Amino acid sequence: MAALLGAKRPKVENSKIVRGEFTGPLGITEKVVTCTFAKYEEGIVLDPKLDEERGMDARLTIATMPGKVCATQKGGWGAFSRKQVEELIDVSLAKGEDLRRLL
Image 1 (cartoon, rainbow, N blue to C red):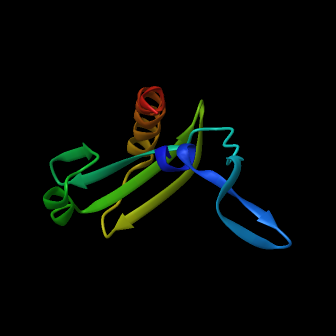
Image 2: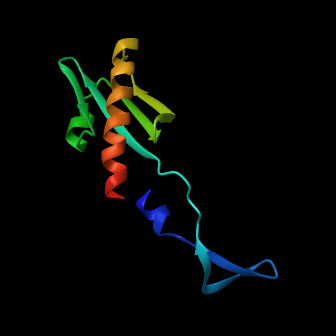
């Protein structure tokens, strides 16, 4: 998201990109951030490190915009209960506000 916020639209003339010239920012209207959760037998970790990812049973990534979920992706062989998913959505919405303040 930080990269997109700093990106610029290239200038285009006669259907060709003019190298080194820009027409302004991309015009991002909402900041989307993600939180990834790794599930293990003994619990769930937010934003796992590589070595933690290797031992996880399941992964759930939740992308949020202010006040709403805009995307999810589940990976791994394990499962999350409905209650766990609802709790992780709440965590993602709260953590998303913190992350957006840093952008």
